[in-house]
Image 1: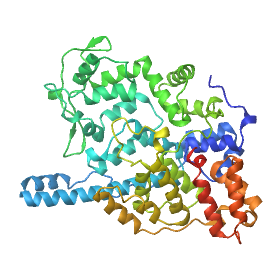
Image 2: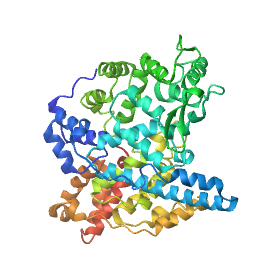
Image 3: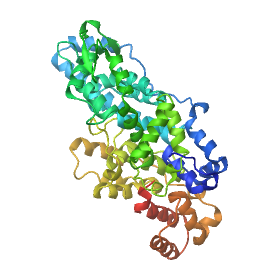
Image 4: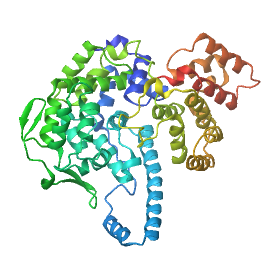
Length: 491
């Protein structure tokens, strides 16, 4: 298992697959560069991203607020009416900051030099699914996102400890209120069921005792930071996974990572995220062994995965449904157009069913075929027009009828934004823009990295041949036709 892909199998299709899965896709010229690098160097480009400098400014508000304590005191001392107005203003600011945060992250995905780092940050966001709907603090959501990015391919135990002490997580799973008199079991349960082991690999007593071990790990609201409260900690003996001792939170997380199931669980989930299908039992064993041999770090695992023959199996290539974020970022990249303004970006992904920083529940997004419904598929077709031709109205208008008033107001704001169309001259050579026989394979390589089905090629050819002039408008419509096929929804 996990034998290296032979060099003679490294071609345009394989390189495109790596770019689509380890990143967010890209134009043919970037894929060609990966082909020229060969598999080992191409994988290194993605995995060893620290070698690539990337200094991008954070949102202006993404830092501790020195005036926060004073505002909290002012709110406590204010009259009920004044407090209500202050809360409304704070809520409005938070909503605007979350919109800005979503757009900031999408820009990093679309144009940053470290696509795998952002792809892993997206994985961790879905794995440790935390929502701004409950946290209600854009700074804390940015801080968690930054944690995922900094530790994206590092050590598993270090990641778990950092997440357990992360302020957004402390609020999200109610760990901040857990004390020896009333241990809160939310985080203890979810860290075993959803984050490290999966169902059936722990007992209810493990949950109860682990919650006791975690008491005292809390959140300082004024300083917006983790705090250990010794007086809240249960110092008594606990029995977890059959072992008895005076365990604390660090001890519990170390015991978790040491469980044989822990490596199998997380490596299978990483494989499923990138390969688009769960690994077999045999492959899971091989992935877990690679992970353990690499010191429970994700970089050696990812390198082995991306170089393995199994990862380039015909059953895996172009067989994963694009998430809304993958659809948007990948489309922007293959169309070589700027990412739309923040309001439009948020409206696009929201229509497709994925609001960054607002996963539907503690399990995150289901992914796979759940991304495709009658409504979201139609939304993808409408939003293709938005990205290609700069027409926001189909995307915004189609969402209004069944949405609550707040959503209708948001989408009306979206509909007032104007974005430009795709630059056809940038995408295709002069010959491709004037010759249908040259344009069709160019569309294949850019949008699908695969051949059209015969009936699809016939529809496109008939359409293009029926135009009096192969002008920009006709070519933009041809792009939209391809982006409205089932095949374009796959990567």
